Length: 212
Image 1 (cartoon, rainbow, N blue to C red):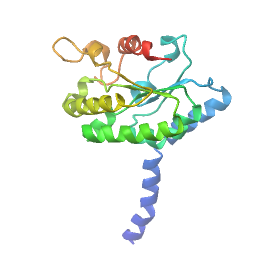
Image 2: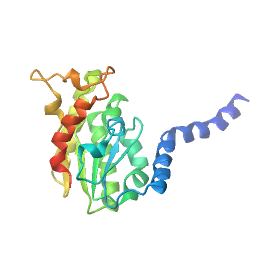
Image 3: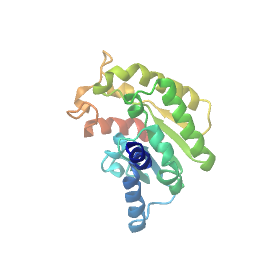
């Protein structure tokens, strides 16, 4: 009997796991019908560091930016929803922040890189003229133990993008670190993971010149 129950539940568990951010994506699609997004926007997507970037347009007032960050997503999640969170908007530029949650769930630097390449190739195939901008994975104090893999992932992604056309690697780490190499604590919320407005202000100053 137990075996039959497990066989019944497995597809449900698989469906739930596959669609854990489905609600957020559907909310985007509903919002798009109510208030159509700008044509050929700059789409920001990725994990909570993008999702929680409130009033994104105020940081870049002369740019058509669109925030489509969702959940605490990994690169695998962004791959899964790429068609709906990126491609559907026919953006002229994609700004991605992802990979930190991959490291926190056990991914090596090599695996982070490989997932990024999978996403890049999927998007580039459908949006060959869009500029692809990657924001380096940030040094969150709560994730110090993952820094070696994060650094490796950043390095591999930077080397890869240097060989591609219409790409940018935006390194935000220098403005988030003290002279001793430790993260600036004042940039982070009490969880030592998510950023305060001061952190986003530094990101905006670095990222601004890269936006089209």
